[in-house]
Image 1 (spheres, rainbow, N blue to C red):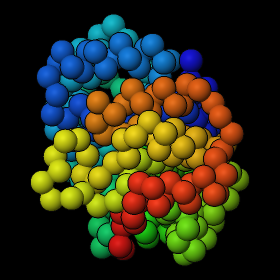
Image 2: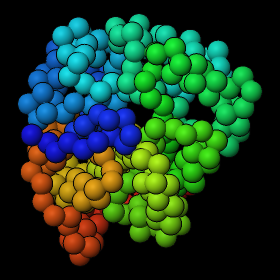
Image 3: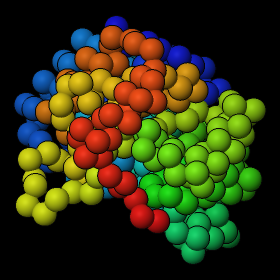
Length: 286
């Protein structure tokens, strides 16, 4: 059974490995249902999904008929206006077959101009606050990719007291001194406010090579069991964070197996060796 810890100030004890449901975007329902069995086997009780993840919300819908109480359910929107976000949340609720999500997140809020729209008059933030007051979403969060996202999340937390953040985190990424410094500033604020920290891209090996479509992720992932184990244990070695699983159902078992077998955080030399052995390169350039 994968370890659980309090998801920030929400009061929910979430599995430290959160199911990244982007992996369901292009699968058949039968494959999705086998994935549900795997999640239940490992005690994963938190699902992270988004309106933009293809058919993923529809694949989750049958699960909610019998397992709604077993999962903390999160979804996301990329809409930046009040009306657009409000309408998309209603579509997500319909597609998921639920009356309420536990967490609703502003997705990929990286671009400064989009931030101004979302956080300004008539922006998505107004829809978020309204949804929480109306009971359609219990908690609110913000997510993003790229090297600037820790600083953007800090800006978002200054504007509104979000319950969670989501951003990339892996060994190579924090070797970037600027990213590491911004990440630590964000973590300090999150610790003080009890904001949950979700992390993605634990298995990122580098940008996707042209013609390499074996796995349903937009980057080149680590696949060797040793490399996956080291990457997972390095992330989970930080007690403050959660690890959102990889966006491919065929790699998911390796991640869950590693998360289910706690080990000390790998030493820096182990991770340095992996950088060389598996030719791990930066995923983000900006």
